[in-house]
Structures are given as structure tokens and as C-alpha cells.
Length: 500
Image (cartoon, rainbow, N blue to C red; front, side):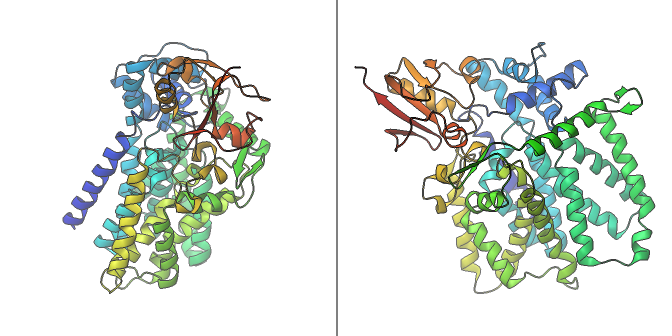
């Protein structure tokens, strides 16, 4: 078994190198400075009031590595400006952005460990290695493991919470109850979607297994104890703050903001259509084009073959768990009004990877071995070819035009501002008409030509650049009607109109 662990560790190291290699080419995305600024406030001022719509765990981890790199808290007008001031400009920007993003790597490693342990538990060592190969070569996973956001934290702790709860349910000893409570608390501190995903997963598992009433009753008291431990962990994450008799007031404020966000909806784009409120097909379509085709085929084959678990363990007890895990996450997301991107269902890839790994290990012993090798090679190559543009990655279904399918954090999240600046410099542009999706880059990133925000009605004389997320989600600018004169990567279009 040590051999399988060593192979899996090597695969994680390779994936980590790919993640780190994306730090320099990609500028900061829309949400990253906000997360870093809030984490810096928690770490240095021991308060958490600048921005409370997300919990602090991942934010603090990024702030720790930024501080190791030399960052210090400088009071600013909100979390956004605090994060931007930490990064600064030019070489300092590149260095501090890399240090900040490095704080998310342990969460990626934790998610990989859960994939390995869960797959090994239900299908053995070879399946565990195959599952890790699958998980560490999924472009959206690598993309969001390299950003200062809460999405990889949600992935790690949704998966860990599911695995730990499964072990606890089998034998709720005192030690397992304590660990269950700690993981629950950390999961809530990771992202507010975790305490929504986990109960949905548990409900599907209970519906599948239908345990006896006596078995259920025997776990009520340990479950309450675990919940109490989790509450203490959450309170600690919010620095044991009180408002009157209310513990962790900013936690409750954050929950309220998320509920309001879901009620108000969020501007989104899918299949050429703009929406303010969620549509049920947003996440199925997004997964269809953001997931490597090879993995989609593996998943389809698994549904037909039904991979077996470890000898002596019924399929319904072992292999059904990751399937129901992924299904619960997708069902919850489909009911949401916040249709932003595949990152909101990123934990789902843990269950799919485990299923694919079990199938690969089973078919490896048959004449279908060549098919498995071809599918894994296809998935790896498709991701390597797209490197470092894994945020905007889409599979072959989109035929090189992802903007006809997806936008926002699935396409242009502000990460290509370095590339836009390089393009304009190569073209000798001194001025550009452009409304960046990440406008603060103009003051805190690399040197950029003089920028005038786009006019909605007509292009300006000279160079005009358009963000595809701005165009697709907000229809800005309105004068764009046809194909571009130039394409800047997968995320921006450009035109040159000679002055009269």
C-alpha cells in the first residue's frame, strides 16, 4: 500500500507544480483581493468586519502566506482595497500575489488526500491512484486551487466532512465524534455552501441505506455532541466575538448576506442567454462543457458497468456513496439562484473522480485497458494544452468558442489583464478604450496604456478592447455586433479603428 501512496503523492506534486506555474501568467481575479483583505484583517487586527459574506478559513490561510512573504496590514477602506494594497504593482505585485495564492495549496492537498483515502477504502490501492490521477488533471480543479478564493476550501471540507461522517456513522466512538465535530466546524468556516451540501448528502445516504430506527436513535446523542463541538470551532474561527448574548455575530451576518444574495439572484449567462435568477440547467450545462470529455465518457461507462467495490462489500454500501455525494451537490446547486460558475459545484468532482478511479482499476484487468489508457491520456493532454488558461478551459464541445456557452468565472474573471497589456504593448498602443472586468488592475497590477472606459453606443477611434464577461453578462459595450478583429486569448476581443 505504501507504493500506491507514494505514486499518489508524486501525482499531487506534479499537479502542484502546474498550479504554481499559473501564478505569474494570470492576474488577480475579481474576488481574490476581497478574500485576502478580509484575511489580513482577521490575522493582523483580530477583527472580522470588513467583509463577512464568506467565512474566514481560506482567507486567513492566504493572509498567513502573504505575511510570510512580507505583507503587513495597512488600514484601508474595505477588504478590496486592503488586498490590492498588499499586492501593489509590478514585481511586488507578482511576488505577493504568488505568496497569497500559495496559502490555498494545503486545501488542494487535503482534497487529494480525501480522494485517495475514500477511493482506497471502497475499491483498493489501484483505484485510489487512478482517482488521484483523475482529480489532479481536471482543469477547473487546478484552476481554482491556484486562486485566493473559498472554492477549494469548500471542495476539501465537503469531501472530508462526507468521509468523516461516513466513518462516524459506522462506529460513533468518542474519538470519532470529536473529529466529526471539528471537521463540521471547519467546514462551516470554509464556505457557507458546506453546511448546505453536507445535510443534502446525508439525506440521500439515509434514503439509500434506510437504517433501522434503533440504529438511528443510538447516534442522536453523539451527533448532538459533534454539533456542539462544531459550534465551538465556528465561534473560535470568529474570534470568540459576542454581541449581547449572540455569539459570532459576523457569522450570522454572513449567513444573512448569502440568503439575501440567493433571494436577489445574480447576473449570469448560459447558452447565449442572460439571467438574473437561477435556471435549473445552468450547472448541468456548465459541467457538460467545463469537464474534460474523457471524464464524461468515463462517468457514462461507469453508469453502465457499475464498478465493484472491495471484495465482500456490497456495491450499495460502498460505490453508491460517492455517486450520491455528487448527485446531492448537483441537486442543491440546481435549486440555487446564484448561477456563477462551475466553482460552486467543485466538490462534486471528488465523487466523480472516485467513481472513475474504481472503474479504471476494474477495467485495467480486462481487454478494455487500452480504452482506459486512451481516456486518461486524452484528459491529461487536454489540460496541458490549455495551460495556463485553466480558468477559461472548456472541452471540445464548445469548438473553441466558450463565449457562446459560459462567461464570468468560467471564462473571463479578470485573470487575463497581463495578456491584454502585453498585446497592447506589442501593438504600440498608447491609449485604449476598455472597461476591464477587473478595473482595479489598472492601479494595482502591471503597467497599462492609458485607459478610457468604453462608450456603450459606439467604439472610440484607435484601439478598443472588450471583456467577454462584460459583453456576455452585462451586454457592455452595446456596439459589438460581429466577430472581433483580434482575439486576446480566450477572454478578450480587440479592434482598431483608424482615427478620421
